[in-house]
Each structure stands twice: as structure tokens, then as C-alpha cells.
Image: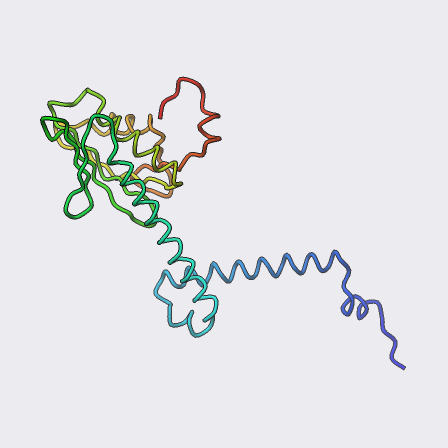
Length: 210
């Protein structure tokens, strides 16, 4: 007659604590596998992923498409908001990568932008020399960050000084710092601004501007 020892009993009927540990380990392994497949897809190993993990590959592809589509909708909403800067009339350039601003008399400014890696890519704000010092760049940037906050879209800044007519690099960075842009490992050589929630706005010290 076979006698079931204690080890066999635990194997057949694991304790609740053992089940919880097994579930946690299984979740960790699934997460690691998902991360591996996602990284492999980014590095040109699609054939391997489709052969070894077809369902997971398809699931990751679908998730990427949904995220990209969502980012495109957010980007379009931000561009629409940028058309409404007080006292300025906005038009979009032919390529869709610039928004031009004019008052009742002159072309006064333009904004260079794009959507890269599901981020709003800000490549520069240029203001005509005759209109500098009037808060135009501030008004445009304020509208941008407010719109990005509303839709939850991060902003990556890749802005070089515009030669002798623009701010120097230190002054340029200080200007964007006042609007919430900071150096971050996600944007080496540039600045990044995470979208702020209403709670962030409430917690900001009084007197602090964007």
C-alpha cells in the first residue's frame, strides 16, 4: 500500500500561501516574457517572435497600434487648441509641422512641432524681432502646455537657439524651465515636460506660473 507523505500532500493540495507565491511567480514570468518579446520586436527579431510567441506578438502589436492611434488623437486636439491663442490668428503650414501666427498687421511668430514616439515634439518657437519682449512666446507656450495637460500628452523639447537673434542656450533653457520643462534621461540632450494633472495644479505653490 502506498503511503502519501507530507511532501506529496503539499504537491497535490498546496497551501493558500503557496498558491499565492506561485501566482506571483507566474505573473512575474509572464511580465518578463512580454518585456522580452517587446524588446525583440524593437530590435528586428519579428520572425523569431512570430514563430515562437505568435499570440503575444499579435497582442503587443495591437497594443502599440492602439497607443499610436490614441497619441495621434491627442496630438490633433493639441494642434486645434494651438489655433486659439489670444489676439493672434493661427494657420498651419503645408507640411503640418509648423503653426504660424499673425496679428492684424504682421506675421509675428511660428511654432515647429511633430508627433514622435507618441510625444509632442516641440522643435522651436520663433518670434519676429520687432515683436519680442511682448509675451508672445509665453502665450503660445502656455497654450501648448495647457492643451497637453488636458489630453495627457508629454512634450519633448529639441530647440536650438536661433543664431544671434535668439536667446542663448542658458536663457532659452531657463525660459522653458519656467513652463515645467526639465532635463530627463528620456530625452538626452533635450528637455521633457510630463503632463500635469489637476491635482498637480492644485498642489503647486501660489504665485508659480506655468
